[in-house]
Length: 453
Image 1: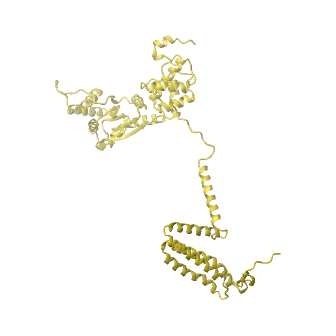
Image 2: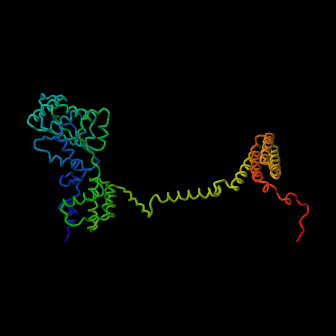
Image 3: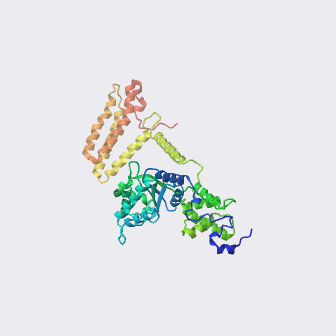
């Protein structure tokens, strides 16, 4: 099929429509209800508006991000309003109290009875509006006031709107007010001075952005309404990139898809990839950050490194336990010796500045070490040998007191070592005469070496 591109440039509204087989442009930013994509969130928003229509008066609040489709939902709501309902639609609310009341009266077609040549006051507007509301209520009609961009309303105007809802019967209020605005509207109504108005909100809904799946469905919906019968021109990566760049906002999706289809038309291709989408985003939104690369998923669970570290720690503790303790559960001799050496080393370093005290401590330790073996080697059958090494402890303590506090720890450590060494022979002497009596040859040391064989 031949495309007359020169004619397309003369009619820019349909520049790429014929090329893609469309009857009209699918991504116009005008709030056309025919293109309304009724996602779950949009259906809930419309349901809240319809509920507020029959809710007995008060305020209905619809908020959402810029371009989320609030106005389009409102246009769809207007098409479903029954014929017995009078509607006043204010789309530019940045007005004073007098200007807002005049706009409301103009929308409802209310004529003022103020004298000619005089400026109507707030009372003139409110009296005329109240008379109109009572008259229509008697005729079985409802009245709805819709204010778009309501986040621009001042506190004085909001208070005047609250006063308009004071006119009521025993069954319902005579004026239903629907406020549509950006998220700042919720912040505005949360102010303490507007607490009375906030308590009159009978329904509120916040319209969120589309998900990635809903974004693909939204694009497909608008292309189908435009008359496309072929497959979707956007591939999967392009749709994913569109959702990232537009953040799921329908208006941003429209801008991005419109420029992307125009770029595909300029290149002469019917397939739109993420490269065309990225270039279109740079032209529409300005500088665009590149997509973040997803981290590759590892082949093992997240908790596996922590489990490995715990096992290594348990193994290290077990090895340390084995090295320090015997299998019987008692501290090993090597561990005790290492502990004594470490204690003596720390004591020596603490007393390095006191040479006389260190010398005296060394002498006391030598005395205790000499006395302990002698006491241990003396034969005894009555068991009194076990008490003799203990008699060396007072000597060690007196020596420690003589040399001062710096060497007291060293003297006590030496005394403890001597007592430990002497306890084994004393215990074996008390066990029996045969075991306690040493051999005669061993008791008499020989002064001459044995003859050589």
